[in-house]
Amino acid sequence: AFERALKHVEMYIERHPDSQYSREQRARLQARTMEPQELLEDMEGLVEFGEEIPGHLLPQYIENLYRTGASQRARAYLEPRIEQLDARVATRTAWVCYHLQAYDLACRLFLQIFEANRGQPKFLSALEAAAKRCDCLADLLPFYERAAADDPRFFGRIRGLRRRIDAP
Image (cartoon, rainbow, N blue to C red; front, side, top):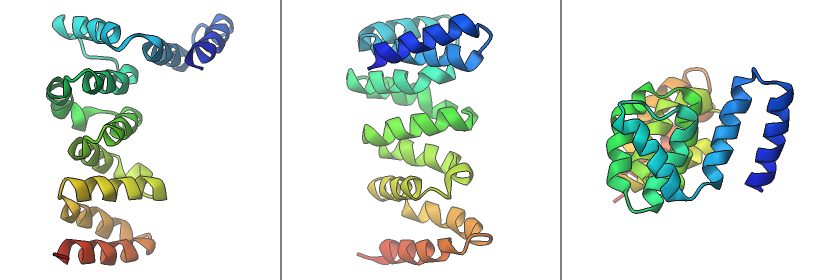
């Protein structure tokens, strides 16, 4: 499926060579079709030369590190950069971390992008699940309380969170 999508993106780029988004999509699809170790070697080469891993490739890089047993390298690379990630990269990386069960990283990333995603029930459910698994449900309360000022649906979530926090 990724190969077919890559073929279509290549055809689009031939007609629209100035499309930055399409070039990023091509790089993401190429990363998905590479062997994990091959991608890691390419990305590690960038890091060795003092380059940052491009944002559009960061989620795949983190996923490959986890899948090849290098979770500590993933954490060491990602943790100091979390607050500098743009919303799109942070969102994709948060979901990768969530699916890989790196719940503490997922929770931090989800909180980083909370405002942009607070209206999405799937996002809120994943945020709460990640926060519960890394024992930081109380960290959600300030975010929910600010959100409740203009979205009354958060009052119910606040009550539910408080019950879960107070439960033995």
